[in-house]
Amino acid sequence: MIAGVLKETFPGERRVAVVPSAFPLLTKAGVEVVLESGAGVAAGFPDGVFKDKGARIVGSRAEVLDASRVLLQVRPLAGGGSGIEGVDARHVLVGLLDPLGAPAGIQTLAARGVTAFALELIPRITRAQSMDVLSSAATITGYKAVLLAANALPQMFPMLMTAGGTLAPARVFVIGAGVAGLQAIATAKRLGAVVQAYDVRPAVKEQVESLGAKFVELPLEAADAQDKGGYAKAMDESFYRRQRETMLKVVAASEVVIATAAVPGVLASGTAAPSAAAEPPDAGDPPGEDDASSGNASSGAASCDVAVEEPVAAGSVSAIPAALPRCEMGPRSTAAWPW
Image 1: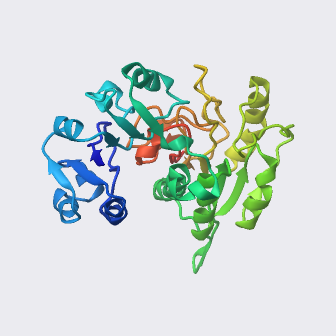
Image 2: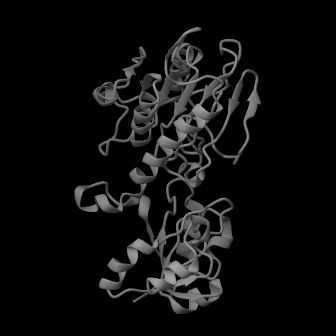
């Protein structure tokens, strides 16, 4: 079997579908790899590294499409039509396809007769753990969110006792205690911050506290907020309105807010994802507050619809999306914003 690795077409996407360390397993399985020249450069893997591992390097996308039946790409649908240009019924496409958040792309593939496998829909069971692309990426982005916020916050995270006096630790509030949220909590604690966390699912309280953070309990009825798979379920607008109102005090008392909550598939109906804060707090925010929130269009915390590299001032708050490809990916995403 010949598998083709295509260069990513979405602006800012630096990942590559296959890394050199995976070649021994592919070779053992009898898979020959054809790689579009330059596909791994942004990820730190020049063509020569792949060639040394046995890959066949070709100069164009068309050559990969002609030579391969199986196509491997990280986010083929994220860049619009350019990501699947030339892909037809001959091919089997494997990648992150976001079928719940952006079903139009899947419909296009279906109309062409393409066989497609969306990696984000692989069941989260023990046998498939090594293929869990969501958890591995969420861990990275939860970690990165804290680093971005710490870099942008005009104070240090840990408490410091100096000859000139004592500096209070930064107060970090993490919204959402899934994989990304728990990693953000752990990272912020390691940096010396005082951490609080909230999740609509009361069952995660023990996990939050096991990492040394305080679980914020809001006076809201959320017994039915978790599905059978452990993910958060979409609630009605009255719940989100009360949630925003009660959460505002905690947000205003924090220097950093990291929002990682996500509601998988919430965009499939064409509706916008619920937001933890419809408007950025202004009067209640201390000057220089940093909000590191991780979210995208299907995230239940913050919006990452626009890729921004510099802080965007909003009163006393500045927002910085995480400089990670996952920022734009659904159905579960994480970014970092300092307020």
